[in-house]
Image (cartoon, rainbow, N blue to C red):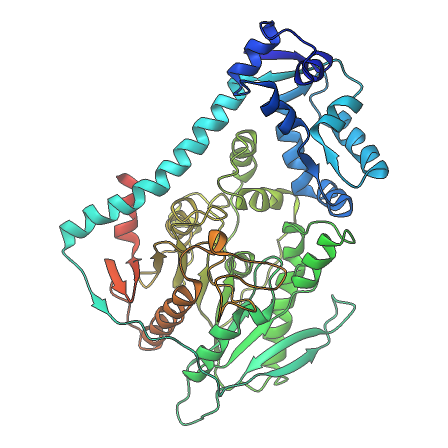
Length: 489
């Protein structure tokens, strides 16, 4: 079912020139605009506030894909490609600093828009289903807890270690025009040699300083840590996007990120980085976690394109990571060398569930420790961390740490967080974005990651338990058996 709306009549109605009992008024009431003032406010709301950044987003793979999907739901006469919208919007951006919906409609060379009601209903149903999964997860965990009768309470100790500092290393690599910048956190004591060293990778638009709290805690506990800065997808790239100088980075940066990773591993092997531990643990946040998993050698299955056709058609914005995952259809990640001495992968707010179906033939026997939060709508824990462990890992040591109230941005420490709920850097993270007190979440993450690493070196697994509490946080440590129960609930 499609609703045709004349652009001329729409503008006239919003300006009070059309009769309130017209057919158009009935359609607008159905869409939620009961009066002219509401529609007028909607039409005059800026679609674009910064034209330089808007251009870069529209030119990116993700921006064009979103525009294509919206164009399937709101057609401009017979144009379902979105080309007329893109062309008109780019022309308006040449003329104006801000572009409103009214500006766009008034400039389109079409007479009517057609709203696909069936398509919007399907999108709404998919959003509702995804949100219900998130809401149901907590009650399901309580039910499982009643069966297992497992509960533990203890005080949370903050990790605010100050004495360990890092060394900056400049590494010349063949695939970059400028040297890679590395932070090397070397433990200050040598009386206890760890079996592993850690390579930590920030997420898309991330900065090494966002994870100094974690690198410092790990180093203080005896693990050498190298933190990568990925040019082209780091905080400098995010700043360039905001200033309209570079397009929105996407999955096309993954090959270079994997080359960065390989270069650090080679530098360590050649003795350019002084680390005695032989085995490596790959660690990352968001896209950094996905890079680590892809670097392990697990192959993306050949059904990705068919899965993505369904995902993108549904405009499933409750899982924003789906755009990055589906972009990998067009990116060549073959001919990867197997990483020697890979002990484990630790992924904070990891994703990749669309890349692999649950298939034991395609899994890796490498321990995974995946962390996530119930307030994460970028990489939802049900679809991503839980689904990812089932799809990728066959190791009995693998676990998911699920923190209630934590979000996708909770692990990121930014300037100002120590004294206020908001950060002051490019992320400008407030409480509505990061969820429950980020410093408490970061302390819990450091505590549990260190516990996992200690058990890993002892070849022991972390006990899987639900409804644990530390401080004011409630969290769950899940193994494959518990996750399978949750999926079946």
